[in-house]
Image (cartoon, rainbow, N blue to C red; front, top):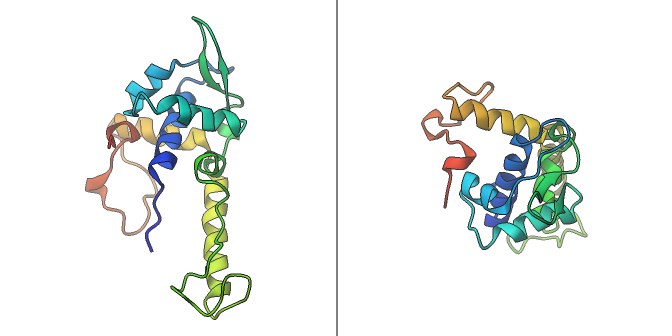
Length: 167
């Protein structure tokens, strides 16, 4: 199974982290070009990415010279699930994991209960992970500090800061 974000999901997470790093108690506004440059996002697509966060109620825009985008709440009160769902939609299995399988997800196949449980475990983990935590890990990586509790099977040599993962 390959659990990866789409490009849009990737960009939304990076943009949210950029806004989280600017949080100073009430949220400083960040210019679109600052977010794009800092996080290696396509400049032409960054307004749409930030717009996804705004439509989800996670960010707000302010026009004018002192404007830009900022989070609507402290990063510690925004879950990674909220950020990802702003880009990817509701994370829930809607199709049988068996290719052409015996169910169409409205019925039940032998794999159905396990697949639902695995999907819920992923959602719960993302819901318990705050945007502030992801931003802190990003800062630790930038400073060369080791990241605590790397998952089993994770390759330490591939550790990259979000900013360095430009596509």
